[in-house]
Image (cartoon, helix red, strand yellow):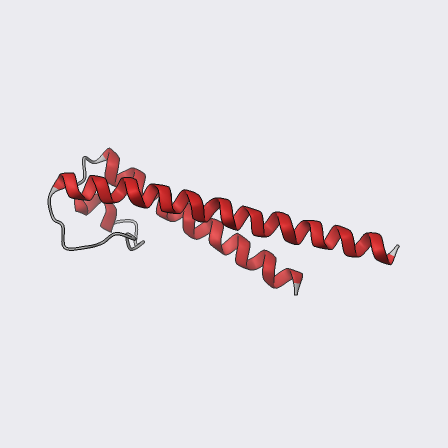
Length: 92
């Protein structure tokens, strides 16, 4: 049970890391879509906006979303770790 929770937390961290990298590449490239498409991660805010400014704004929003996702996943791992510690304390 705890192993599944840890796996979910680690997967969330990995996905958010990929998204953070993609958003950073989009921002660094000045909002050019080609740089973001090379990462293989779909942007969260992938609307029909095509201008560089719109892509940059979307990337900044995505950056914030992925940051929250990363923090939530880290909290899942932390909570699972605390749960294992509590269970071990109860057993011993």
